Image 1 (cartoon, rainbow, N blue to C red):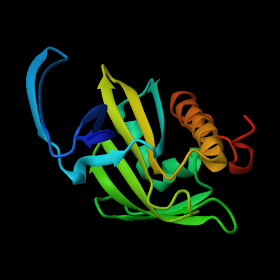
Image 2 (cartoon, one colour):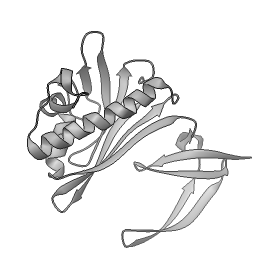
Image 3 (cartoon, one colour):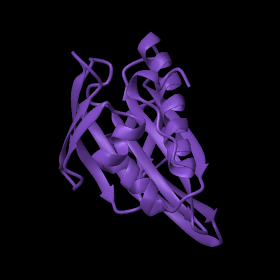
Image 4 (tube, helix red, strand yellow):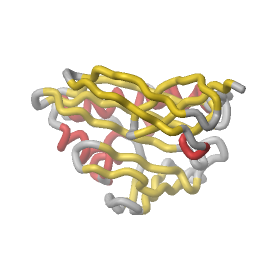
Length: 193
């Protein structure tokens, strides 16, 4: 039986079709490096493609260190995403994310590589966000940063998913403008700019 799955390995993903329990071997050419990739597919690496994910990739004209600070620290988060936050920016650290009355959510840091990778798993939130992962892979491009943002694990492409996809685009634009130009938008006006 052939099933379609999205495979997440090493913070990368690929859409593949293969029999469960099969072994895949392929050659790849990535940024001047020839690789032979051999993967033994197991259930822990499989994620049904029916789930909805959000991806936004964009450049920011500042260093990865500055972007990392803005996505992992209260001083940064509160300038572009949250109304207020209490954070412990370490692997396994807890985050309290305040979006106003009735919307104080919590998350745990599930990936943390200084100036490179930052990921939160939502532990207290609206049902659609619960268990989802919000992450950033930062790539240094000659002193500038390529941001690869994701919000994965949505249970379905419902109205909340669609609204959140739009809101992420708006918030990430504010992050970019804040870091590049020093702009700051009050929390209540962030989705109106």
